[in-house]
Length: 98
Image (cartoon, rainbow, N blue to C red; front, side, top):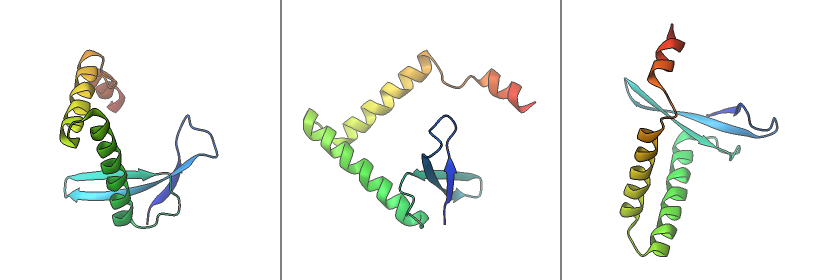
């Protein structure tokens, strides 16, 4: 069904819809959309996946490469950035849990 929420540090009128996706007994993923008319988790997942696929295809055509190379490059750049300057510090997470 999805839950409409407001994101902290976003304008008050900007809301998104959050869908819970149970991947396994021990894992839950979340799909977020700004299309508040969405009411189905499955449909929302399909739409997000299609939009990502279309964008990756556009980037691949412009750079004359494959979508898989684009994806690998994006992941590689993200990992390098996080290793250089992590957004989440594990010591902070442990302190927050106490």
